[in-house]
Length: 361
Image 1 (cartoon, helix red, strand yellow):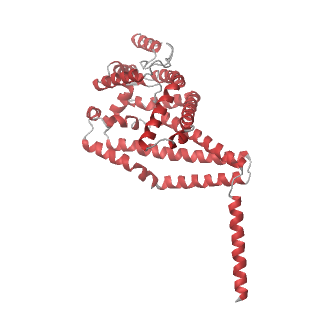
Image 2 (tube, rainbow, N blue to C red):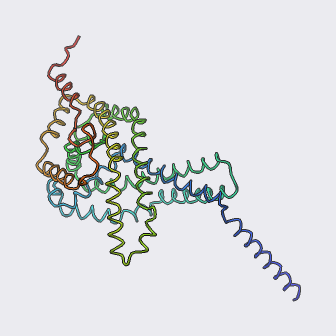
Image 3 (tube, one colour):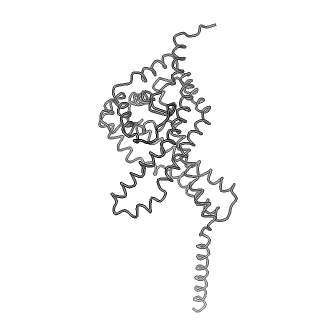
């Protein structure tokens, strides 16, 4: 009996020692903690960049971009969306997160990403080389891209499954008619012009050709987002702890964000200008692919938008004017401003070309 008790005591001591060593080994040194924090920040930046690129190029976000307008009865009526359709779309969007998380493919990707996240921590604790750490993070980023695409495709499918082809076409036409308000465009909206298979292939090639310019623009957007987030949150928690209640904290946070956004307007206008340059280059390349009939249809949508679009444009411009900071920074005459859906010089050249087509040799 004594022998068993002694053995039991030894086992307990060994287990306790193992647990103690494991706990010690699970504590990051200051240098390792710095590596982990830097990796978290870099992963956030890389994920933002990746998601923005996908949003610009895939077109899956096209439907979600008008979700706010779908809450307006007038907009739904213009598209001919019935109450039943809107109910199905609303239910689909409310349940979409649960549907995605229960998707076996998504779960598998999530499990792989979780395992790699733990592997990264273990690699940091074992002082792995930078190359090893970089490879793990690259694989995590690839998995996150696949997860984001599944989310994006599922959300977009809720609209596509519940709207008719004609209603989806009306959304595409809406985007063309409101090009003046966008510093960047995406090719999928031009499906409203009945693109041929060859034209779609040409659009794909144009996207690949423009990829470096897209990446430069997206990098500026990400840098702005990260900087804005850091400035807004710098010392925010300490400030909030001094306030008496939730309402005061909410008001303080909102006022702080509005003030910082106003202070960073010059940086935002630089990004908008960058987007316009990329968008103009992209537009011209895509416009050259359009037939004269498609060009005429697009011009009609831009120059003679439906009444509801006219009302929206008027409302947006009035809101911009009303929200402009009094006495604040004002963009120069060459800075980006809404109202240039088609580069003026190109429009003149294209319409001249259409009126006087080359004769065949």
